[in-house]
Image (cartoon, rainbow, N blue to C red; front, side):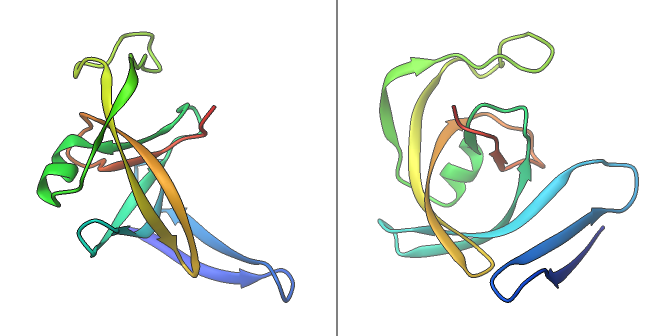
Length: 127
């Protein structure tokens, strides 16, 4: 369960407060994904991982919502926090989606990979 709230620090800046309740210590951000090719919107949440060097989206999520993907010119391998390579093999595809969080919309490139059932989108800090 999450508690969320809004606080205003000036007339131009609003900060969303998100607090984990319970045993899991993770930050999830509610968002809307908009696909230009299918003219479809999907409400979901993304897990924020400041240790990840990119943004990722689940293969299963892509298939479920029929999101168009593109082949990377140079596939790459992903190393996890414990130093092992991901089980799904190298990243070979990506997708481009409009991401809307609160009233802010932006274009995001997501690398497609096998993620856990709970984690459909992982937001890291792209290099």
